[in-house]
Structures are given as structure tokens and as C-alpha cells.
Length: 295
Image (tube, rainbow, N blue to C red; front, side, top):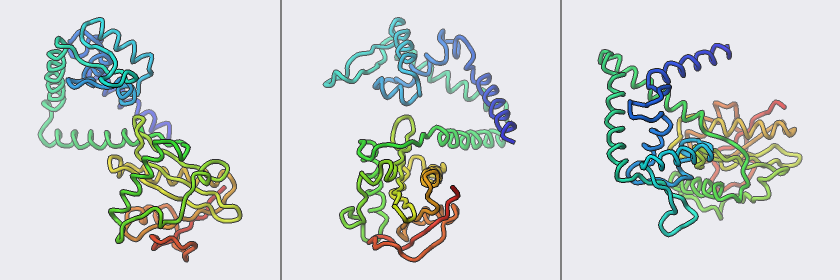
């Protein structure tokens, strides 16, 4: 079955690259390949930081530099330090390339319409709906989940976002000082791990597990940004945390949660967690769950 799935994805990729002209030497007859045209579009009239372009497009820094140099030599782009911060490099369109950007915009609309125009109104709706679903699923597949030091600024940002999120949902708000403490040293091996989820190098989720000696492991601080909700990132974080504990010999994992986090409670139940008696005195908890792990 996996080979059939892989073959289907490859067929889809071939069809899409052919239909959108990704293989053409001159994308949309503008004298440059798709990579250069896409980079020009992403820079846009407002300009963009080079580091942000690299993250957004998932490009190797060397390849991005070559693309920028080509656009610079064509008089379409300038690259230099950002105002007020010489450490940040900015790419900007030239006066000459602003007209080119507008023409790319117009031709992109024409290309999109050329895909829709041969279809009936009903089939257009089906295609656009299918494209939206494919886009969401592809975005989900682009999210990277990996261990991160809890003191990393991105990890700190996620924990702050978690606190803001639950503060708005709990009946009496959320004060981290009143919650059971989670110390950094508890979330680094061998005591535990902090997982960070990123999309285009930007943090969009997190979760942690504490490996208690002679007791079940404990999952903490599972959070997913609104921008990627509904893409399975929360379940993926949960699975990775469970696997981390199981791989190190733990046979059970538990967690506590607030009654207002209904989506999280549903996810835990669907993942095989069963409700148990309270195992701690967490001020903000109303439900306690446990799951047996298979080593």
C-alpha cells in the first residue's frame, strides 16, 4: 500500500509541474525560470529580509545567493543592509522590476484562470476545494518536530504563547506562578525533552515530557498555534512525546488538563488515554489521564 501512495504522489507532482509550467526555461514567457520568478514575487514591492526568504522558500543559502546575484545582475533586485541594523540583509525591487512584478501578478491570474476556464462551474468548485485541502495537508507535512533546549528563545516564545492561550480559556485565567512548576532541567535529557514544531523555521507548536524515576512519564505544555490548528500537529507532538518515553523504557505516560480545553481532551481520548484519579494537586486541572505505552 505504501508504494501505491508514493506512486500517486509522484503522479500528482508530475501533473502539477507540467500544468503550471514549472519545467519551462522561461516561466510565463518572462525570460527567466520559475525559481527566479518566484523569488522576485516573494520579495515584492515592500522588500524582504534575506533570512526570511530563505526560511519561507526552504532554499539553501548558497542557492538563494546565486538567485539573488542573477536578479541583481539583471537590474531587478538590490541587496544590502537593513536600515538601522547592518547585520540584517534586505532584498528590494528596483524601479525597473516593479513593472515586472506587476506583470507577473497579472500573468499569474491568467494562468490560474486558464486552469479553471475549461471546467464547468461545478468542477471549478471541486477543484478549488480540493486544492485548498491539498494545501492544508502539504503545510502540515512541512512542519518539522525536533528536540529543542527549553531555554531557546523559540521555546520560550511557545511557552509564553501557551500561557496566553490558556489564560483566555480557563475560567479564572492562568498564572504560571500558581501552576505546578516545570523547570528547564526537567526537560533536557536524560530527565526529559522539549519538542519544538516549526514551519518555515518559525515556531508553531511545542510539547514536553518529564521522565519521572519509578513513576509514569508526564506530558506537559502541549500547544499548537492557531495558524496550524486542524493539521494534526497536536497529535503528532503527542505521538513523538510518547515514543520518546517508550524508547527509554517507560511503560506509561500521564497528563492533566483543564475542562475548558475540550479539543485537547478529545485528542487524548482518541489517542487511547483513559481518565484516572488525580495524581497531583495542579490548581488548573480538572481531568487526569494515563496511557500504557508499548516499548
